[in-house]
Image 1 (cartoon, rainbow, N blue to C red):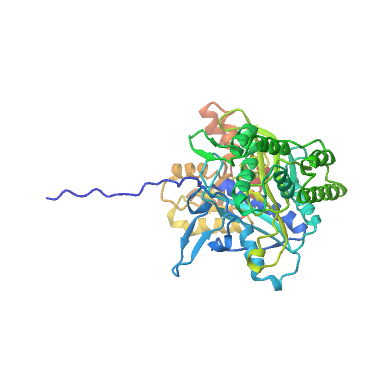
Image 2 (cartoon, rainbow, N blue to C red):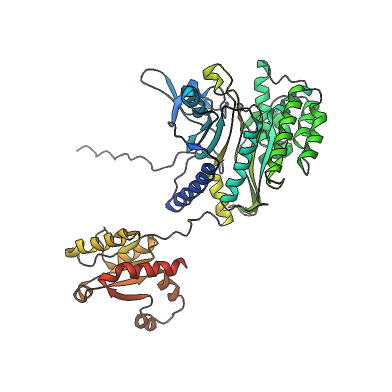
Length: 498
């Protein structure tokens, strides 16, 4: 007799760089998105949604990680052999949308959008290949007041989420200033033959917070080997060039005017660099006039942003407080969002310059930061009221109880399993139910229900050590007429909320 072949089952495993998200975090993030949306709306931005994937050529060459397969994005071929890619941010799809509908749009076009993005990057701690962004962009004006407004929007967003002043700062720089520094170092920032070297410099500086000056110096030179042994090729700059660039990123001072004065000698011979300084000075003037002091919006030459499509001012929203890290010790959260001016993205489609500027919030990272501050908002959310099924011949009665509570706006569910009372109570505990409703034959004859307050019962159980006292006291358990079920449960929930 042939031996029965063992059934092969797939292994339940999460792909690298991805994560599952539970109910509490989902609710907290939804609350965050609502508050962010409210701020964006008050600034006059309108919502927009674009698809999760685009034609690959629409995304262009501005990719986040060109050292990875598929050049930093996840791509696949359509049935007509056209390549599609999952969006790596929300800006490139916006550029396609504006180009496609340009003549019908009011300009400047102001939109906000939230959604998932995907990056084919090497995953690491806190670095995921799928995450949520929330963007606001102004398209169709080169007025530097639009950049200043984006900085104010970012600051007001963090404030609305409960991050106090002093625990965040919006840092501002200008790509034109960096290009002026590169010119002074003998690197043509506009030449095709130096484009990859310039991009490597940008990405090296963008890692300053994570790697420190020594790590950035290695990436500006021959390269760097990380803790895993992987080697990242550097920009190949000479020591004098590296020194000039590190001098640029460390030129920040106590206020905007002092920083600008420190940068001036580094770009004195570059018209592009001087233009960038003038734009920074104007932003500093506008945000100051609007009441945004240097503790909320500050000029910082260390901000460059890693994507290559930025053409002018760039912004970074940084959290400055420290919180306890999972592995022990304290950590600083750093950047939770950023953006800048990108005047070339729409031009790729239309052939004419269409200036634009915008800002993107990293939602998952910001949620982690708000949790550390105790402002995430849903970590202690309670579950639904659970109605126990004591008599299966009266399921319809229990379902009507649930319906009455739901009609009053109370989360409620009837137990749908097939287990007995003990298992049902364990289920209610696992669901974090604030209370359960019990109606057996005796209660039904009296026209009553018994409400067991699980939150109060748990508290009292820690105070009563004697089993007899526990049974006699029946803590946090009481009966009410069936007609009073909504009012009684509402009282229980209100007591816990207060």
